[in-house]
Image (cartoon, rainbow, N blue to C red):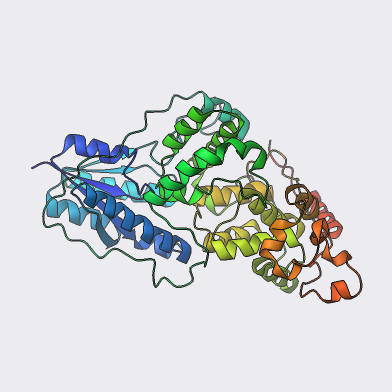
Length: 462
């Protein structure tokens, strides 16, 4: 009997799963395997919201496999050790898995390949499982990766994507392969109250509904904070319950400006993954060399805590941070505003913000999270590293009536219209009645401090 092991990582789905399809086509029996990686836990990525969402994903994946005659095998420990144990138990000839881009994923893949080859087994790594275009598929003439999005997107858009695969009809698993119990969302401590459900079933339901009623308005509405017009598919992309190849294909098939804008966002995700694949150190170190003298004293620590708690005195920033805590998620425009305020207005190290986001974001992805923070901090791929997003100006543009602020900052629900964005301008009893802080910093002072600090920096490379 010919046996293959399919190692699921960030690809927890049955639709459009090339490693699973290849294993089913080439083997009599397949072991669908997920290893709860203790190395990931030690690295600090096992945040409560992601563990809860992961539990949903694994239970849904197991249910889908059981409908097809199979089941999910779950192990816990070092990935290489656990995969090799399953290979030995089933006498599997090969292991198949999706490619990933972080430095940790690359080291894990090398260790697994060496261990399997030493035992006469093979490891097959499939690209375009977690990305639409493989990270190394596009390179400029003078570098191993694109450092600017616009030329990358131009090349990315010309790529012919592989066909999206359907889900298998049957999955046959060898008898006697032991498995640990599936984790459950219930009982996970520290989970955000408004965390959305995980799993391929939930992801495909959301995708179908959004393509029908949300995609057409995405180009004009995705930055409308009160309108909540984003797809909210990023957690499903992070855990791989949806395929980026399928998303691009279905959006393009729908057509229109909304589809073009949405596909561009998917290309941004691929862009950051190809950057991290080429420069894994950018997960913790500045991508472009800077010599920032980030604030870190007692006053800075107080400002950081106010930012974390959504008590900065700038309502749109505070609304974003409170949504993050309640839902474990926030729209892209809110992320930009919160990040700009921390790194540019408060002049705090981007790693502080990135770490806090990873503690709460259900879609906390090392490539998108870290490199978007670097983009905003001016240490990453932004071609305008000095840009500063004014929270009041941005709030007037993307939340003109203040509905988003009033949704998440209940202290300000009685403040009418756009006045909610500048509560410090209220006078007399109206201001005194608000249980809301004064701004932690004057915007002009924060901007001047940032400009003075940039003046001491060495010039950024182009």
